[in-house]
Length: 189
Length: 189
DNA sequence: GGCATTTGCCTATAGTCTATAGGTAGATGT
DNA sequence: ACATCTACCTATAGACTATAGGCAAATGCC
Image (cartoon, rainbow over all chains, first blue to last red; front, side):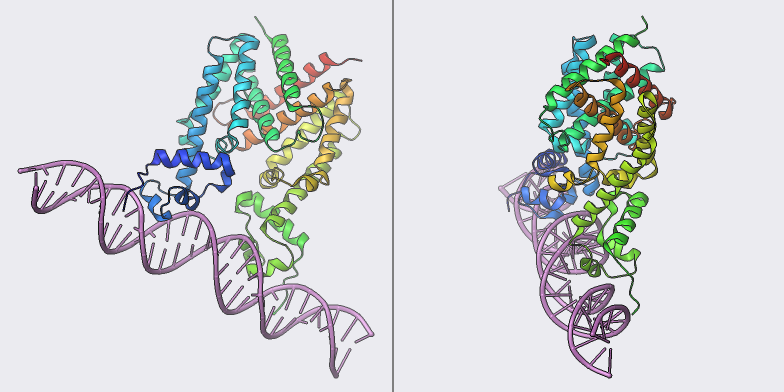
């Protein structure tokens, strides 16, 4: 009997791939076991249960997304930074729909606090430094930007923008211009 | 044997209640059968399968949400209409988290086309009439507004705004003001 | 190198959910 | 009153989660 060489990390990665291919709701321990040609019960040596698997995939996705965004905004400011942030976000959601779905998996408060979700908020704040917003406006703007990016990615993934001829890409560019202009006109230097 | 008096409509409504109480992912034919003190197999006389139940709940939620929004915007225009629309939307999502989740259940294209989702888009366009936007800007704005509202409702429901002292309500008001101001400055009368 | 220990994956089993087939009793219509 | 229909039933099978206990491969120690 050759061992399959399972580990929480390998299972999480394979689960993330499965999510991207078939949807996050298709991520089951059974499907994962099939992928490694192993019996479902064997996975319980590496993962407490299916909830832990999903949580790990969610954390992986948050981490990856934060890494890409950090990379994109490095060395940029103002409108450039806003655009880079937003595009990195949307591109990740499009390239990894299953992982992006996973990133919205409900985490318990302390897991969430220790996750890369915190970096997301920090980076959004960093973007806004280019717009000179005082508190509490900055927090409001962080929430507003998060809502736009997340909402757009979700609706686009759900096919909500497929019904008209106008390309989702154009509305995205328009939206970024809209946000930049409006934020600049609010800045209090 | 007294009959339970099941029907697709009653099952859909009970399913929606179950969703609000326990989450949309807890909506199963088994749970629904327990609620009516009936065996799971009995439900298959009224519903083709669990997918049909979920689809029906999604359509119900879209319908209810569209009704509320229509009610809220009736007789209003401009900023008033925008605020009324947005608040009706957010209030519904807060009052009926399970149904709101259901409203995002993936529908096949022709079901979606026949759903109240169409009314949502129409009403958003109606709001924007107060801002005199020419096409394709109007379509871009429809998508942008949909993204903000949906994104905000989702993030708020996920508890993303619970970490700071600044109330979600205030950020919401700020966001609506931000959108109104920015849209007005774009209007081309 | 041989032996004990650890551990990775196994079988067996139970509970839950979806779904189908076929049966029976209550409702309906003439 | 009787035939028909249909709402709900039992029985059953397949999929997924999860636990318990077993065996063999890997590992550590002398």
